[in-house]
Image 1 (tube, rainbow, N blue to C red):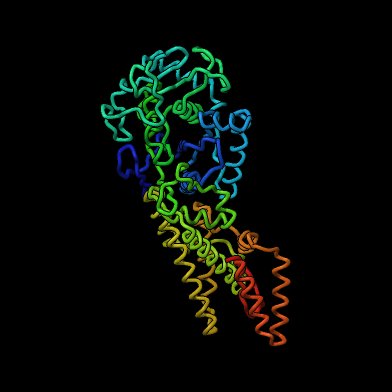
Image 2: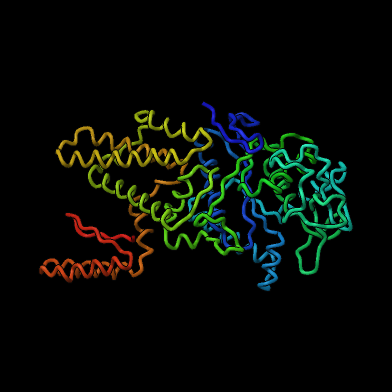
Length: 479
């Protein structure tokens, strides 16, 4: 069965048929690197990371590019405020973004171009647009003539006659039309600048992505992704300038856009002050929990971040890893056999059918946790009856399914020791101190001083440390 994707351009699901059989070229808009990345960036990066992984899982040869916008008004303004160069500021936040992506298990794309490393191509495309009469120069600035593109607005559905200059469209009385947007900006004092046929200057935002995409992937690509906020004007302008420059339509066959992340039902906004950085979330929750939260809704749907939603995601991951830990303790030999995919073909098919329907990760995660419930039930019944016949086989099948889901979700791949190690690293006190208190509690219980033992348990609980007693002793975890 073919993969079906929702194409923002046609506003419907379509069979995914790449331009070149068996090969996929995918470009996703990356961050403008002037500050730490927030969970909105994480939503986009994780969503398209899964799409990248799944296309490869389905046998496609994928070339994936995700850019850095490293020259921009925001970067320049922040650099001037801090008294550093734009390059220094951008490199700092590129490094921070890469660290955040690594923490979230986001695979490195094939290409990670920077706008500043693509200046030659940007100038080349801009010259082509001028030569074709689709752009014009004004005292060192170059603008694209929006109204010359007869189908302008086909992605966003906006009527060109009703459009007004928006927040990201420079208002300049010299322009032939208020909607015309900058391809090249003449240099101002204190700004980074490059030589061009129109004098020293720097690229506009929209042309950067067209040039970076063309240089790494070609004039026509299969998938272009990004957040819904980029549909207009950024992606609309990308289409206009790219198709005008190359004369090829379409520039992109399938446009995919991820939904917004809201914070407590409000849109993330610097003006409200509710921006939540990735690394701030990871101070309190594991990367698995954040990734699970981001994938538990369909990538096109908006999601609402609350502390409860992350607590629920963490609890789910803890339940998963406790189940795997129990399976390892009770059926260790099940971990020593090769995965048997044909043995669970129907269950794998259920997951791939969900993914083939516009990458429905929420349904796949639901299927995984059904298996978690089933495995615990089987082990409980075996323990109660002493009848373990057939349980080992089912446990090995469940492990096979976990591995398959992990290949494209980027989840369920760690050992319980690795997960709980990260989870417990967030404890409010050193592990050695916790272990010492656990020993004191054991001694108190031995001498039947249950009041002292309960005081230790409650004191740890107040600090978010949960004790769990079993026949094998007492273990602890962070709440």
